[in-house]
Image (cartoon, rainbow, N blue to C red):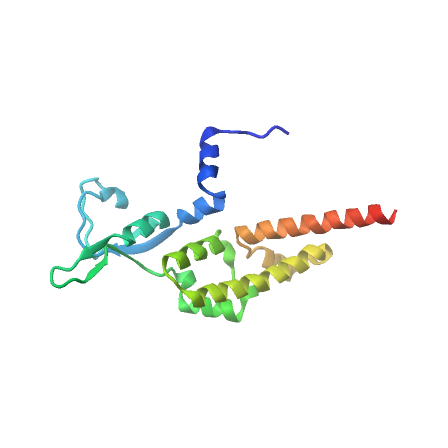
Length: 196
């Protein structure tokens, strides 16, 4: 089968490792400007000359949040400076959510946040949170073990409990499941050839 090629796709793949990277960067986060900002109405789907006040919450893609948060404004009195844009911690990374991931990793529904692991990676590069990294890492190990078991025992995959688990996978876990299943199938074929 002939592979399709497009110059734009080629450029994008040169800049990013994969599509998940782009989609994680475009995930929206809520935050506020710390000062009144003029001529940015396009951020609110408003007239371009509109202004945004510090009281207005905005949902912006991560790449923009990251850039704005690294712009600092000086206080009028003293040498203190603060970030131009303050971002809120998303609900799925709240203390309550991470406690749930820690206590019950197999019951976490990561399909709601399609690129969960990539987003956590981006968030933890943005705001250093070693505890969150540890919790998500342990959750991934536990879930990967279950994915491996399901890949090996394809006959058990169609039970209600297993189907419900498969529906909770994020995009990375879906790829892992597909690769793992394919590997076991290829391994079985190879064993048959060796034994014949």
